Image (cartoon, rainbow, N blue to C red; front, side, top):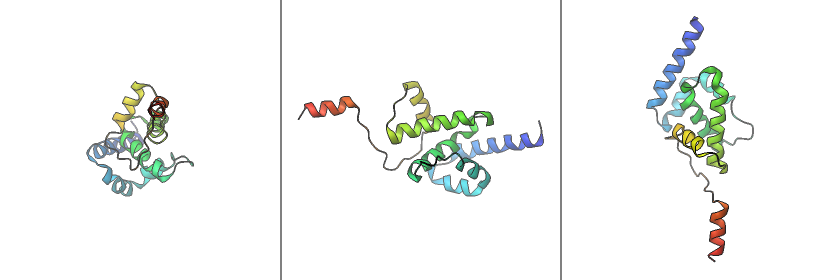
Amino acid sequence: MTPERDLILFRWVLIDLLWSKMSSADVEDFIQQNRDEAERVETFRGYWESWKHWEPRREFILRNMSDFESGQVDHLLSLSMVWANNVFLGCRYSSELLERVKAMAEGIVVDEAPIFKTRDEIMKNQQGR
C-alpha cells in the first residue's frame, strides 16, 4: 500500500466510526470539521436539487460512503437518487431495492416529506363519494 492509499483508507474508517455514532443533528458539525470530504460530496449535488431535497440526500451519501470503495461511488450515488426519488417524488422500485435504501437511510429525518397515493387509492376514494 502507498501512503496515499493508507491515508484514504484511514479517512474512510474514521468516517465510518463517526457516522455510526452520529445523529442527524451532528451532520453540520461533521461537515465543518471535514471540509475536504464535504466539498467533494457537494460536487454530487444536481443543479435541480433544492436544499430541501439535497440536505437529506447528502446525509444519505455521507452516512454510507464508508460502505463503498472509491470505485463504487457511482453506485452509492445511484442508491441515493433511488431513495430521494422515492421519498420526494413517490417513484416506485422493486421491494428489494426499496428495503435496501430504506435500511441505508435509517435515522435520516426528512421534514415535510410529501405523502403519495396510488392510482388505486385515488379511485377508491372517488367511488366512495
